[in-house]
Amino acid sequence: MSRKALISLDVGEKRIGVAIADTSVRIAIPFDTILVDGSEIHRIAEIVTTEGAEQIVVGYPRNQNGEPTLQTAYVENFAKQLADIAEIVWRDESLTSVQAEQQLKDLGYPYSKADIDARAAAIILQDYLEENYG
Image 1 (cartoon, rainbow, N blue to C red):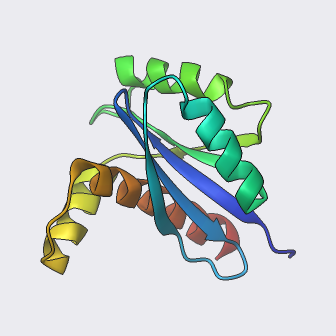
Image 2: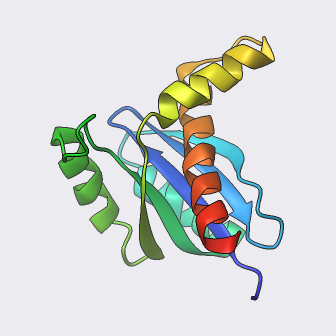
Image 3: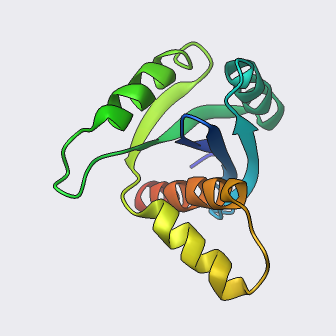
């Protein structure tokens, strides 16, 4: 299997967590947090180009029953704007922010909501890597 660069997004209405990975290494790394201010599509396009990513793994929000929510519709509409930039791949994001915050607490360093978002994107991407690139 050839090497591929991937990016992952944890899309929120205020911030978007970004993670990157290389399929040959299979480790997702928190990369950045982008503020939602009107420039986010351009910034994501820059990251995709710089990293040479062919796919964007987008966290797909659902409620505890696995059903779509208002946030699901927001993320779906946001992702449509990225379809010309790279292939969109959906990945369930259930509880990734909770996991991300716990991981950061375990490290014992101060962290921000932006750190949680970037780490949540890395969890989404790591799950995708493990399932698809084992």
